[in-house]
Length: 405
Ligand SMILES: Cc1cc2nc3c(=O)[nH]c(=O)nc-3n(C[C@H](O)[C@H](O)[C@H](O)COP(=O)(O)OP(=O)(O)OC[C@H]3O[C@@H](n4cnc5c(N)ncnc54)[C@H](O)[C@@H]3O)c2cc1C
Image (cartoon, rainbow, N blue to C red; front, side, top):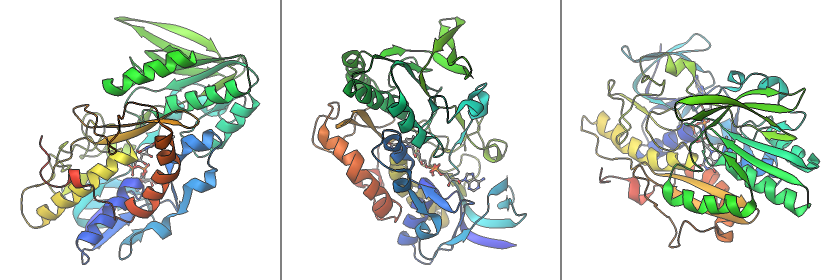
């Protein structure tokens, strides 16, 4: 049976970052990554693929080129977790044992929970930036749009990058206005408000009002009727609910998301299927040699790649403490960042923590729309991701030991 000191399950944003930081911290550590995909995608770039700014190819790299030097890559998927015996079984039937396990499998997208959606995607104006297959089609659909209803949906939380469903609505609105189209932009979201963090919700409400966007809250998409171009929503109003049918000419869908079944059905999961880790130490509450970060981890933070930047150094410090039989010594403050693009050339750089406090990285009012933050989103963050985050070079001062709870 193969054995590794540290086994990382998932080689996405979280898995690669944490493996790279571990190797930098302890060069001799035996680290393996279990990841089936030969390609790695910069998903935060897909909003700009859908807006015609990036090509899909700009967001792709070969996984082999990102595996940190000295780390073993096992190109298989985890098919079962047995934390009572420190073992993972793989899709190819291997059993791998470990001293420490890190779970970083991300979300799965539940397209099929919406009736008619899978068949409708990719034609007739039905698109989604949440999939590499369909993000390029978003831009095609925006360009082909001739007027009428452009409907943008947002699924119930948690989803990755909760700002992404509205960013594409603002970008499309800009594109339509530039072409002087008679467009009605409808943002139909399952959430009760425009954004979960009050300090950033206030300027976003102003953006919605200024643009004349029709924002409809507590709207959960249940069905797409491609033949009649109708989107069906379940709308909750207090204790009651009703059905609402909205005709569309363009429909951008954000699907519901969930942890993969292999995690949700394992002993590692909490009642919602996420890995049951302490929200500060990122250590499992029942299996001390198991840690988790990224979208699949059970912390109540906003799920973003930026959050991984806050989590990875904490996880590394606490994992090394565990190996040396010390108590966890670093705490994650819930940091997340959502660059809220409000149009071409405008972004509110929303950074915040568990306490919903603004935690700006720049000495500027973070609630303002700025061209400089658009530049950061477009030019700086992709390079930061590929060259600093995934190489383990970036350690954010404020997240390493001593964050107050
Ligand atoms: C449209 C869009 C816009 C976004 N915008 C932003 C943004 O502006 N800013 C931001 O910070 N974040 C943004 N995000 C979110 C960000 O991409 C995710 O939060 C981030 O990728 C999470 O990292 P992760 O490693 O947890 O998951 P992922 O990066 O999704 O990686 C998970 C990996 O696990 C692998 N895996 C799955 N199952 C198994 C298994 N059984 N065994 C082994 N491996 C497995 C997968 O193949 C994958 O490689 C956006 C995402 C999307 C889709």
